[in-house]
Image 1 (tube, rainbow, N blue to C red):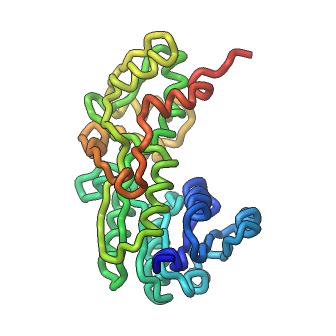
Image 2 (cartoon, rainbow, N blue to C red):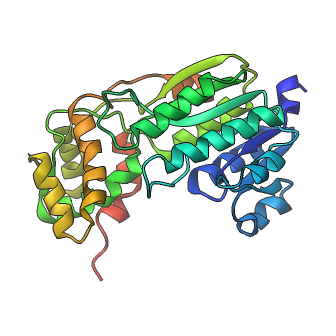
Length: 300
């Protein structure tokens, strides 16, 4: 057994979609101790029965984090969902990083976003940038996984596009190298279980960057009907969301992803997923085909 297989690994946010999947993947391959940290331990009773140690961890309570991180060698810090107030999530992440260093954690893997620099229009950019800076200020080793936008997000907009025959957003000619949550989970599990002890920043992308015109073409073929792409102004996107009942601040926040993709912030394609996991990430065409029943519901 290699030394890294004996490491004690901890996953934060283990009750969430990504965190739970990472734990499940580690159960298949890791021979050392696996700890799942969550605010809601009762939701992970099934993982506990499979040998996972479940610990309570509240990002608002530094003492709970210090206790949860005791005896941990490598920690996966999954970005939280505290998006209610600017800076809230960053403060949570700083709490976790401080607690990890105090607990003697040797290496932190963090799920960031591509191009979180000051020029990024994405509303969550400052949270991720600040978290990366907090990690850099520690003495720990770290791996920052800068994830592209999830393919799963397309499942929210494409059914309406198929129904209307028009895919409408403000992305224009911009490209995105969409990635599935499953591939992000596999990359996160591999990076967490890795023997790498240094510091590294990696872009996590799908196998290709596509325009909205290409997305529309893929959907047209899948649906057996033409779906055309209609680019509109960002203000019109925001107005459309608010007309649908979304609060304006939330609509403006969501629209920043359109702006970022339009600016090319999500266009970089890497082979990082394959290098980490030994498997190529799924293509957008294969992903959408696998979710055809969501895109094109069977008429009742």
